[in-house]
Image 1 (cartoon, one colour):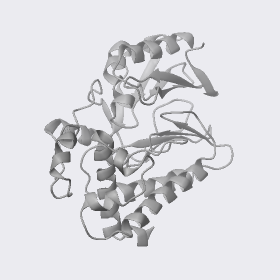
Image 2 (cartoon, one colour):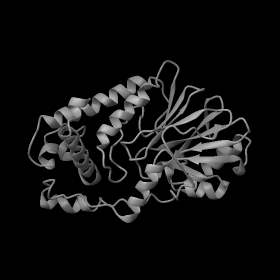
Image 3 (tube, helix red, strand yellow):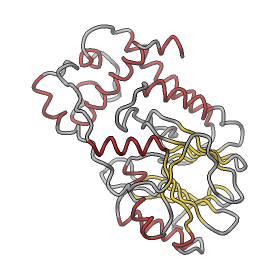
Image 4 (tube, rainbow, N blue to C red):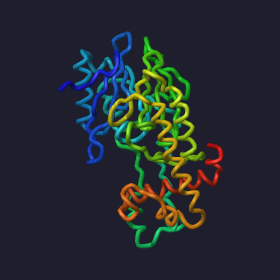
Length: 310
């Protein structure tokens, strides 16, 4: 089996194995420029397998490690940025990320506040299991960026016009990339073909991640015309980006309306009254903490008038 799949002219997807028993792989992308160099998007997990898989793909494309010109990470999570430092060491290529994501890395390194489980109304006997999964260490292997990106920047990829889109929500500095000439949108974890990404998973934010995410969906959805292909961070590439963005938007607005129908009470009481795919009673540990966190975010979104503004 080839170590990569060609998605479009000069754009290749590489499946990077993911440890942990969840999703089996993330998707990294190697983008060729007109000087025979490669630009890497999302190197993947902090494992030797990730680095060897990427270097095998580089070799299969007839390039050497020194031909990798840049490493762009869509966001700070380990399954996307974890191999960045090791790939930088192997290739000499600089690591680029959004400036807000670099700030989030610093905040995580300084230590994030623990959720106030008592204020959330979590029963005392359930608090230890949640406290055990509240830590958020700096993603291993992410490394510090060599250059920072901002919304609207055009990446230095000779022969291509690839624009940076700041799409916060999943994390504060998540970014997407729009290859305008090739009708490609690299969506990271902002838009996946079937999975609904969690929100607010990159440290504190002064804005509401739900509102941020919905705004990003509108921007990205406007790029999803006929012939446009989405290149996400997991699962598979897909078309129908505008329709998928609309579906994700409705998913979160539906959840917000459900939260609004249960005003008052604690976050725990509200969450326990909502509809969960596997049922409320099946949630435990990280999945329970995530459910409570998402409920708190939707509640804040509703209280800030998000439903009325949507």
